[in-house]
Length: 276
Image (cartoon, rainbow, N blue to C red; front, side, top):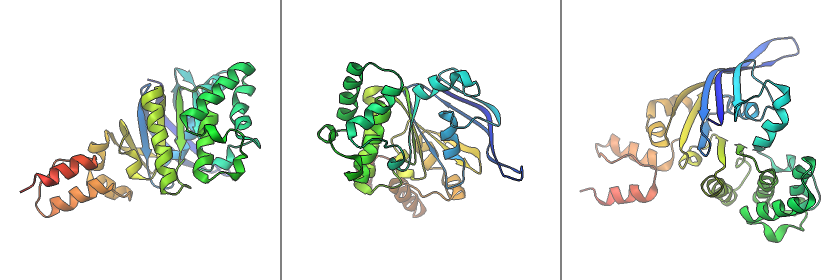
């Protein structure tokens, strides 16, 4: 397991000393090389969990181990942040330089990576996100989707084992969202990077290996996407919206038409064509 959260609780403390728990006894395990999506509505605790993975926060109770390293041990912080990179919702919050390639070089330079290797990492990261021709551009002149690709490239240049995408598509248009999701899938499949996607968009989780649903700071459902999305009662309880395929199958079932549960559009079309 590259991520192990055991009995994790996390509380925000007000100026008056009042504790408000955002996570309550959460157990989440993620294997190296998995693509895991954590779903939940606003306030469910999913972004709080993301910040615990990168040790931006530490548990109030319980423990989180990242590649075997306890996030509560300050001596582990640098290695944890090398292991688990983060891509946030707003790419402007991650862009620090006036030229794209200088922005990507920022992280490796802070790690003391030799200049020649940094150049190789820049080339590698730009090729993965398909932004090679923008290396000399000013980041602030790029579109939202392009900025997010550069933010991803900056994380890739650090060569992490894990990348946490914390609502990273929320500010993008449909094309930008699709592009970033395709990059996530390629990173997972082709680069072997463990992907943790934090989102409230159900359709983004369709291609995950596993899904966790958080509600009121607790894990209320986990499993592969088909098992999770066809648990209609749980989905309705959380206020999440079913992906199109699951919604269509549910509506068909309400009319008495039985069809195999799938989240693959082509398989669904094939199943509909076989109906008599």
